[in-house]
Image (tube, rainbow, N blue to C red):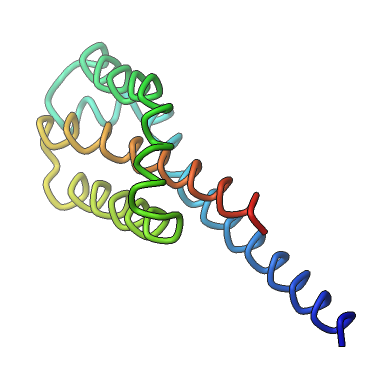
Length: 130
C-alpha cells in the first residue's frame, strides 16, 4: 500500500515539474521576446530605441522588489499566487497587444515582470514543500 502511494506522489511531482517547466518557457519567451525586436517596437510605437530601452530598464528594476514577493505569496497562498501571477502576466501582454501605445507598453511591461517574479517565487516555494 505504501509503495503505491509513493509512486502516485512521485508521478504527481513529475507532472507538476513538467507543467511548471512549460509555463516557465512560455513566460520567459514573453519576457525575453522584447529585446530582439526593439527597433521594430520603437518604430511601431513612434518612439526611439533609447526610450524603449528605458522602459525595459524600468521592467528590470522591478527585480529589486523581489524580496517583497515572498511576503505577498505568504499573504495570498502559493496556489492563489500562481494563478494570480499567470492571469496578470497574460492580461499585461494582452493589453500591449490590444492597445499598442507607448504609455500602455510602459505600464504593462513592469506589471508583467512583477507577475513573472511572483510566479517564480510561488512555484519554487510550492515545489519545495512537495
